[in-house]
Length: 201
Image 1 (cartoon, rainbow, N blue to C red):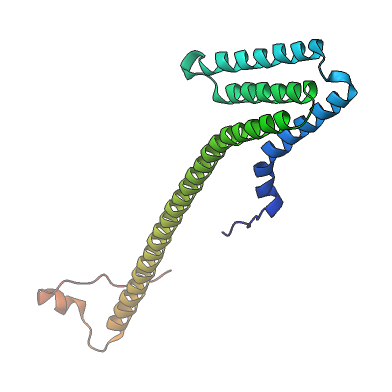
Image 2 (image 1 turned 135 degrees about the vertical axis):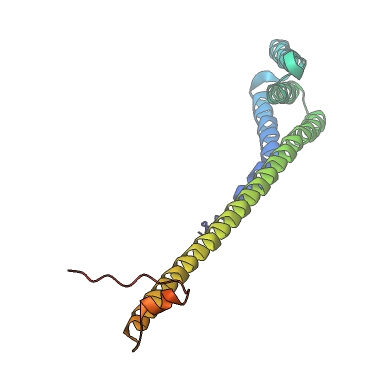
């Protein structure tokens, strides 16, 4: 039975690759908008972003050293949040673009590094699933072929048995109608007597 082929659009494949750059660029743009609206050289805003960044980094550290080796997804999310908050804070507090752009490049590179790890794991899991599915499909197809061959052999054996029974019945009827057929003489001669066909009353 053929399964429907599903092909995803190229944008579906490409969208995850652009997501880290889009996210960090959005944070940079929002930080610069915040800068233009009064965050530049504001100690209160800078202190807030430092506290939030440190809190997210601390949460990531605790998640990475947790019980059983930590939760990689939670740790990655916390560290990414920490980097985004640091980028937003620097973009909002400083005047000029060189430092925010430098931090944007660093945060984007780190985001791609973290994402690449999960992309590799996802790709490995998908390939393993496809291989497992292919192996199971081949095994089922093999079992179906074996069962089809066995059923065909049984049908052929049944046909051969039915044909033999028909031939035997025809031989018995033909022998009984031969002129000079005498079952008593055959018994006297030591030949086995075949059962005579019974007549229905």
